[in-house]
Length: 357
View 1 (tube, rainbow, N blue to C red):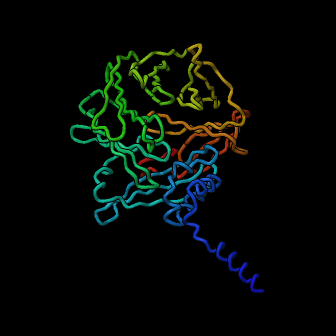
View 2 (view 1 turned 30 degrees about the horizontal axis):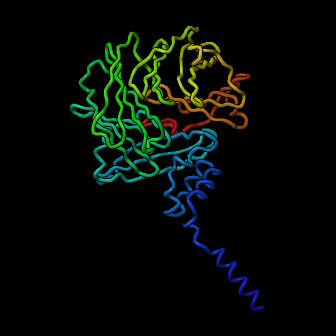
View 3 (view 1 turned 45 degrees about the vertical axis):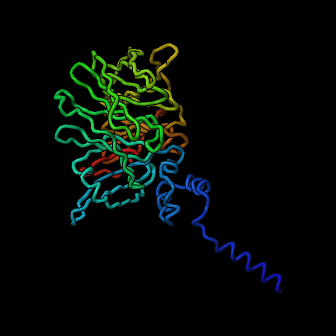
């Protein structure tokens, strides 16, 4: 009996162990199997679990999250960040609220979110003689401040495009801020801790409209779909190729597994999609047929005008479709038979940012 009691006591101690000290690798492994909303609840259990970076567990099978982000006055002179998160295929949403530290309040006053990557929001605000740039993580409250950029004095500058070489939390991440003047395209780059930007300018016949970073290059697409590549190593801009196919009304520039893709969309009479891949060996665009297991997520982002994410392995009716935001809905349009499925999205006209995260 005593032996059994002692054995029972040991089992009870094991059951009553402190789960807060689980190894980080185990926590990440568990969290990766949870839905977006359950991941957020999982992190709320205790302080040590909350320390896991959301960028490590946010995506489930590559599925991007929808986010509605706003900054509101708390009534006491402070600012609260409001972030509403949901999955495109999930009707539930979960809010995240953070009180912005008083020292950081001025960063958010008048700021606009122009892009997002790996759980980070890329924010800009215009000041008297410069443009102020910073990144904000709504899950961890972390802020990455970049050097001021002197672009407000360029009267012909209409928009600022941003990109990163990797996750912003990476120690070797390169940040890009680019803009178009009347006759030049400016590519500015910096790393964490830099006091200024490395500035490069290139003459352009047709204005650059979209950029994305993959591999060791920043790819820039002009309004006529001519593709340029800016090398991170020698800071040279090279013209790779022009687009010779008939264009449809809207185009979307994105990458998947370091492949450059261009999708065209038209919905005037009947919804039409065409997808092209850039063949580096032959330096030309080639039309491709998307796999029926592939779902292409296309959303509205300010930085490139059009922002895209790609995910595999969704079930019906989501797999084999283009997914795009048509506020206040998110729309799934089938590659195969043209079926359309509409779900509500957490869209708000008052939000600073509506899009993917």
